[in-house]
Image (cartoon, rainbow, N blue to C red; front, top):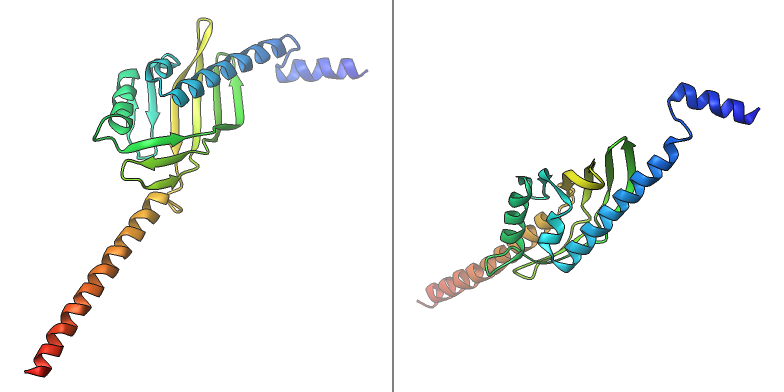
Length: 191
C-alpha cells in the first residue's frame, strides 16, 4: 500500500524515482564545483577560479560593483587584491551553503561566506556576507553563471570603522583647538 501511495504521489508531483540519481549526480557536480572554487580562492589562484565561471558570468560584489564576464572578474580581483594600490590585503572565508534548489541543469545555492577582510591600511573587518550563486550544467561540468554577495548595510563594519576614525580625528582636533584657545586666553589675561 505504501508503495502504491508513493507511486501516486510521484506521478502527481512529477517526481519520479529515476530522478533521484540525477539529483544526486547534480548535487555531486555542484559540490565539486564549490570545492574547486574555494580551493582556488584560498590559494589566490585567479586562473583556477575563473575556470569555474561561465564565460558570461555576472557577479555583484559587496561594494555594489557589478562584473560581467571572466575578464571583468579578473580585473576586479587584480584591482582589489594585487599590487601596491590594492584595497584588500587578505580575505579569509569559510563558505557554508544553507540551501540549494535544483531544477534540471540549473541550480541556485545560498548561504554565508563567513568572510573576514584585512584591508591594505590594516583595518580588520568581519563581514559575514551572504550570497546567492546560480549554477548551470555545461556539457559534463557545472559552472557559476551568476553570483551575488552582500553585507548588512545596517551593521556594516566599514561604516563602523569610518565612524571610529572620524571620532578619533574630531577628538584630536577638539583637544588641539582647546589647547590653542586656552593658550590664547591665558596670554590675553596676562597682558
